[in-house]
Length: 445
Image: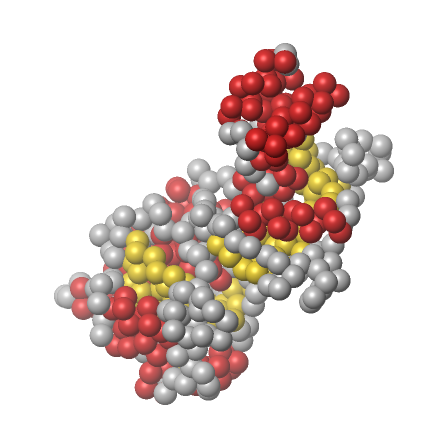
């Protein structure tokens, strides 16, 4: 098949994953340079192509409903030909043309086209490979222009030479960013961040090697005891995935309010989830219609959340989040930084401007990073002990006793040996997570 690279032995490469997306077959194929995302769609013969051309012309001329076109023109074809006809007519008139499979595939994390050539993507089953090529090739700048317009328009937006840079959300909460060439770029481009239909869970992250069952149990316990957490790391390190997994493990009687600029957290399986999203100004430069994160954090406190989570803290919303911590709510957020000193500096400088007494309300900082082999891993956990940050975990070493967790447990289990309670809870939760992890699908090695 065109676009499938050959191995040195002359074969097409080993298929490591195969599944269906609608009527298309998807294969992740091991090739010399990594992985190839291979799309196999129904093959239209010349007769099907001719009937498709007739149907397209009638659609343009008369605006006939797609289902009626299928009913009318399928009569001219055999069952097998009709199958391919329906696929391509629907793909072109109601779907996303060459990008249709990429928009539908729930296993894709992001896909992008920055110039004519193969569509590239990050696959959820193989995130450590980062951007991999597909066998779907965009042939020209003109075809790329058309596809950028098509995806944005069918997602409910508009892109023109007067407005050549567009970012919108689809009805499924996928984030579409498009650029039209000419004014600001040599080539048109498109990047789609897919909203996770199947969110990351702690058992899944355990199977992927991101963290051990013991550390997962600790984070679960810390969040359940309404600790105040920051998950820190650089772009693509897995901060939001880890935050999502921790929140999803919380008890069903918790009310969890999440606040984001763009939907990335998915807690649909949790009955207590209340998501809130910031609104950008409808007119560039105008603040009248904007609803910023800080306004949403204040509003969220009126809904009595058990845990309040901000997708990513960047500015003064962190102050409102710390206020929530001071009055007894659990809080969690992510921060773009890769070391403790830089994190403290960011939190205490503009635009966050936390005071020392506010900083003391943050209980734990979890650092996560992408390793040289591409896999994500928790690299350190720090506990805030009266303004001094104590390292309590690093890979290859045992978790040190978390003093703040012991204090919280002591308030609940009065009269008991709190260290024994902690060890029991850690073992119990770790065993639950290991049991759940055994049922999880393993990522591509």
